[in-house]
Amino acid sequence: MKIIVGLGNPGRRYENTRHSLGFRVLDGLAGALACEFKREKHQGLQAQAMVDSEKLLLVKPQTYMNLSGACVAPVTRNAIQSASDLLVVVDDVNLPLGKLRVRAGGSAGGHNGLKSIIERLGTDAFHRLRVGVGDERDGRDLAGHVLAKFHPQERPIVEEAVERAVDAVQCWIRSGVERAMSQYN
Image (cartoon, helix red, strand yellow):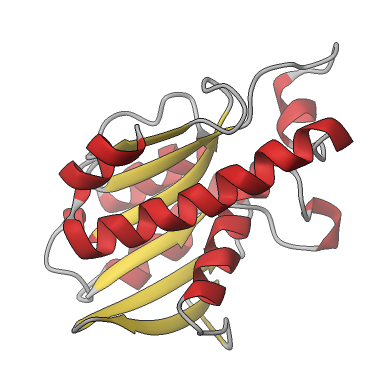
C-alpha cells in the first residue's frame, strides 16, 4: 500500500488558499483515479484507489496544518512497510509560484505541517512533493501570505501546477521517487 497525504486547512474559510494547495492536488488526484473522499477516520478524509496492483490511500487531514501529524501517524501505523511508502503533498513558500520539487526525505524546511508529521512519525524519511506558492507577501506576515487566496493573475499558474502535481504523484506511484524527481524537478 502507498499513502498520499495532501496538507491543508479544513473548512470553507481556507478553500483555495496557498496553504491548502495540498488538498487541491489530492482532489485532482481523486478525480484522475475516479475515487471520492467518502470516509473520515483518524481525523482525516480518506479515499481509496488502485493503480495497477498497488492499493492507494489518499488522505486530507482535518486537524489544521500545524497538527497534521496527529492524523498522519495513526493512518500510516501498520499500513505501510516503510516511510518511503508515504508521499506528502505540501505548499512551499521557498519555491516560485507553480514550481514543483519532489524529495525523498529531508527537513521540514520551516513548514509546520511537515514538522508535525516528522515529530509524530519520528522520521523525516517519507517522500514529499512541494508545490511552490511564492513569497510575494505584499506587506503581510508569512501566516497572512499562506492563508491568503491566490490573486486572479496567479490562478492559471496554480491550475497548471496542480495538474502537473497530479501527474507527478502518479509518476511516483508507478515509477518511484527517483523517476518522479528526474521528471518533475
